[in-house]
Image (cartoon, rainbow, N blue to C red):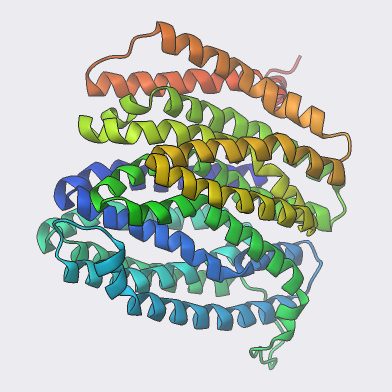
Length: 502
């Protein structure tokens, strides 16, 4: 499969899903109300926390599938591993859904601070949420297999269809059935069932054939072989959930559900920066793992550095626009000055923090491909040990703004202090080149430009021209970043010479 084609497919699919998830939020709020939308934000947070139950198994099946593609394991071993993981996933999903449903009364009556929604309606919504989360979590296993086979064009086409059904078609459904939390989440449950069934079918269409008569039954031995790697990834995944969701969990109890909706809106927009990185990481992890399995170290480094430049060209301009024009972006999106005012002070902080985070995530890909996660384990332990107490302290004193400042600080410290250690361990002599050429040269011009544009270029006061202006500013920053990328300049020169040879 073409690596570039997979990245393009990932970007198209990811951006379409993100666009649908963001674009229809004002419509949801118009029909459901701000407080009811707070439940949607609570659902997204619970879904992220459910990933703790993954215990590193989804990344493991992705890596092992990629290793099968590279010839490191055979077809029978891959099928045995999938069957073993299915047994674990189904058991955990049922246990998790039942536990969450049993806790629905406490969540509705004790944890969430509602004002206008009937508490029995909230409880019913939480029960539906528990089933949806379990189904969507199990989908991750089959997505992991499909990703490992690098069938990302199909996967993203499927994601686009599901996103359209999930985000867009729910609106006419609510108009007919009623814009209540129960109707919204009942519809989402139906979509989750369809999604789950189709992913199972596609996964088994891709799985390699084995000799007739061999029965692949559930066994512990396939899991034991990858247990060390899985548990390391499990801790890494747990830390990621804690790092990115602890503030949302804490604030879901401290804030009124309507105020929590403002926070959710801001983080939703800021997470678009992280989503910029997802399409590349989705293609990068199996490709780097395959290159390492083949012993192609030069190819691995080349892909690693080029991907860093590509993310820097897109994620940093996005972070800068959101940080400098937070309130204007939110008003252009929602048309609601009150929402824009309350959410902007959070958005600008999380935009900066997420911009740093996507660049700091690259050493993880390097360690993942090599199957050596000890340093990542240590870093995450230190990160969480400092982050959680700081987050609780800052949130209690300064609310969601305090959480934003902590988010910036911990990511900046990790970027400055830990990445050099990882590079020195795995790719000696690379760090200065990576920092200067692959990051610094790419982001320098956009950073200078945003300060100049913010000070000297007035923005329109009506929504449509404002949207076009903000998009234009983002494009300008991306072009400036591309001009600083040695990889992009090389690609342009190569294509020019291929089209117009001397």
